Amino acid sequence: MLKLIGGPAGMAIALAVLASPAGAAARAHAQGGGTFAGSPKEGGAQYGTPIVRANPARPVARYFRVGPRVVVAPNLPKIALRIDEAGANTVTARVVLLPVTETGSIVHLNLGTVNVGQRVVATWPSGTTLAPGRYRVRLHVRGLRGTVLARKASAPGLTTLTVRAPEPAPAPLPDAAGHVFPVAGPHGYGDAFGAARNGYSHQGQDITAAEGVPVVAPVAGSISFTDYQAHAAGYYIVEKGSDGYDYFFAHCQKGSVAVAPAQAVLAGQPLCSVGMTGDATGPHLHFEAWEGGWRVDGSSHPIDPLPLLKSWDVSATPVAARR
Image (cartoon, rainbow, N blue to C red; front, side, top):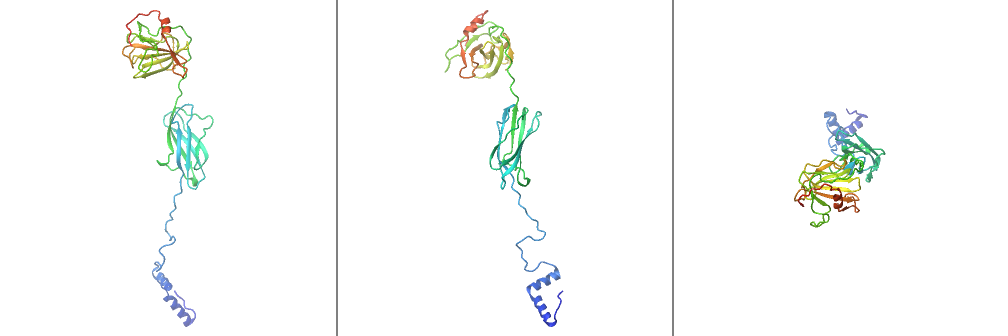
């Protein structure tokens, strides 16, 4: 409502105001309560319009490596990482190892404050151990305003680790109790040490015998290896003898190996049976004797085992020689 002041002069002023654009807008507002005519449609937030805030930047793992991925306890893997975050100089980080198998427990590796944009290698606290088993290794990061690590394929933060149990310690060598011939049955002699082969020379002495005849330990010792080579030794065994030699037994019959690595054996104890597995044209035992260990390093080497075999062969019954 417009109040007139000052008689005719005031009335003239009031009429001028009502005739102006501003007065027309005020009149329209007073009558209908709508939007002012000619009010700006852009520039500034209107009452009730939601405020859109940009999402804060999140830390990203540009590099996260655990290696080697398979370790033998009590060894621990090396963990290296690099974190990036726009506007941040440092972040806090930790690594959590979650056991996938039933063995083991959750392990936390707190890295504390780490610099952004730099490769960091984690330091394991003294006395840390990981039980054998499989683990999921997960990186956790806190950045500016409490933001957490972004999880996406291009920004790694998760990997796996396998911890294996240590190999059993070799069994102590029993006292030597004399020697016996390594083939416990009728036998003969085949190709000798140094015989020509395709590109190499024979490194042992062939002892011919019927398939299935027992092969025994010539002296007390412990088993170092049992394995299989399809195109060479077939099923084979290596014994570390208490007399200082390593002995190699090749072409054992399939399914006949009766010993395992780290097992102690006595002279005459069955190892396997004469066979013809691998590169063999007939049943026989390929027998080698090594000084300096069996293929340990450059100083290891085989010797001609025939003199040893002859000294142990007190009841040989010849059979036809075969390769």
